[in-house]
Image 1 (cartoon, rainbow, N blue to C red):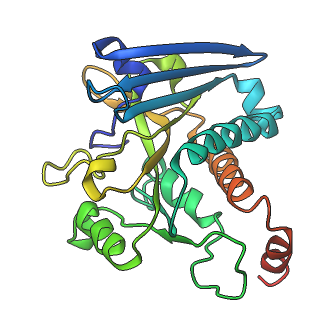
Image 2: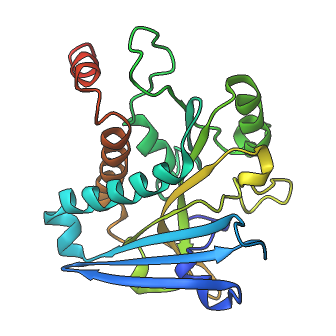
Length: 259
């Protein structure tokens, strides 16, 4: 059982957002897509926070995972088109790798292809991967760890991957959320700061799945967590790899045949 609180799923807190300006919901067979926009400034061309959620059934997860990957790719393409990345992409897996319910970030990043070390493939994006772990193990806050990497690599995009919490049992292990609003690494620790666009003046994407159910007294996890966690990691990692390297078939061939 996880003892510290995780960041909440947006679908749990959406009703409390008075500045929620636009929401669409689309039903696609065994999946429901929710898209919310929140204007963060009164100016006409102000920066908007956007949250896109994919709700899926157990059958869709077990038998039609490829369809979920396609949906995640579609959303990633949507955000990347808006972002116009200039510079390396840093993908950050948050959480503790030794605690199953908190290991989602680390499991995903293990499956993502890092390319920042290559100079021979000029057409591929530069991608670096880090796993800051938690301050109790490293003595360094995730925020400070990430700031070191940002200052060194000067990335054009940060992608965070982390487990979330929900108060709705029906959403536990059944939603993928992607947003450009930011995260609070180690959100239970007061010394950690929120990381959003304003923090480093770098676009942010955050990808999460609610693996923790918040009740009045406890934080609970699904009895199917161990079975489903590898599926979630494969879905997200596959979607990211295919989105970033879809035009680099020669590199993909080189990577998989030189492991």
